[in-house]
Image (cartoon, rainbow, N blue to C red; front, side, top):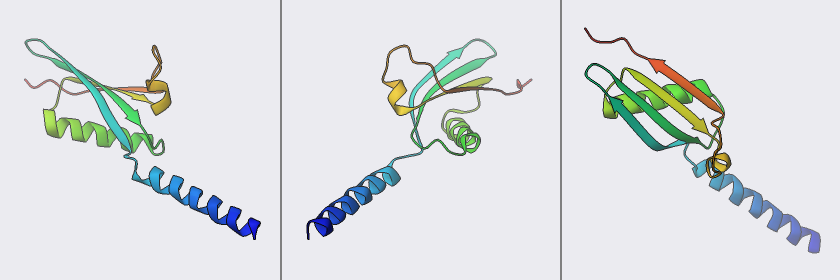
Length: 105
């Protein structure tokens, strides 16, 4: 009897953890800094990544979302952090990607 109760409670705990994990977003943009001059606009994004698979596709999604909302900058720098490391002071991103766009002439 006790084994059935323990197995049931364990299964409910595992299902709860799985449900909460699946509800998490893939990423969350926490900070956006833009530097402008006469002919350039450099943007730096700080992103917390919750689901760390297919990072290249995730970076493309972040880039597309940013450019759709804010327009295309001259340079876009995306810094990716794990959720636990972002909370610590002086933590380094696990990946930094810089995308340069052609200047409009």
